[in-house]
Length: 134
Image (tube, rainbow, N blue to C red; front, side, top):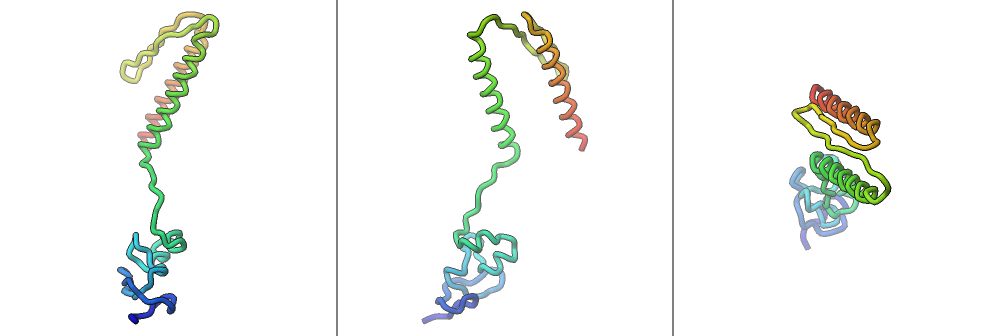
């Protein structure tokens, strides 16, 4: 029989903690960090010390999350436009960007919606520049 675990004192130790050098059993060891449960909880990985699995949930980068949000917003907008195409008279027009300046051309009975879209675009551009300044 080998050494006894320095943490629990019951099991045979099979691993050595990378941080403190303690001999620990498999129940008191976090393989993903190669640390004992005490050192693991000191370094702020307490959830891994409790379940002894050593698996962390992957977090997506911020840019990918915003891309996914914008992609699904465009997808929902496209679906709504496809659904509304079959109802009564339609109005619309293109919105063209030349640099940061939007140029809106409308037809039909929706000039108020076109003005609202221009205001929203200006608001978003202003928020974007404000965010860059911070």
